[in-house]
Length: 159
Image (tube, rainbow, N blue to C red; front, side):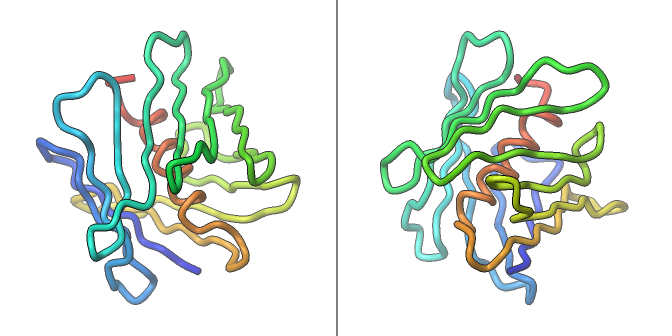
């Protein structure tokens, strides 16, 4: 399945939609205003909460927890690495690995050694726009949450 993640560059509150390949809204992402650390919630189009992303504070390197259906689904920890972005991702659904460019505009996501998703930033846009392709048999919501966390860690100066 293909998704388009488009986030406004100039926004008081991080709120954006995730669209399918036909430009239909599929998910709505909203950040929690006035909170310590980044906290985001992913909703379906009927405003039902599906996922919660929470930054863990007081860590040397960025760390996020991803919850789906109230249960911890994954923990994403930025690893110290020169000249590349590297992450330790543990999940109840398998071991994930991210491989890609230094600036995290193009990368692939692997689960248990198998390619499950690829991400590519679209340039020359008035918003941060990513094309995300995910294997149909994978947990679409979890992979999208991983993409959002990786973008926050690599491109957000609030970390």
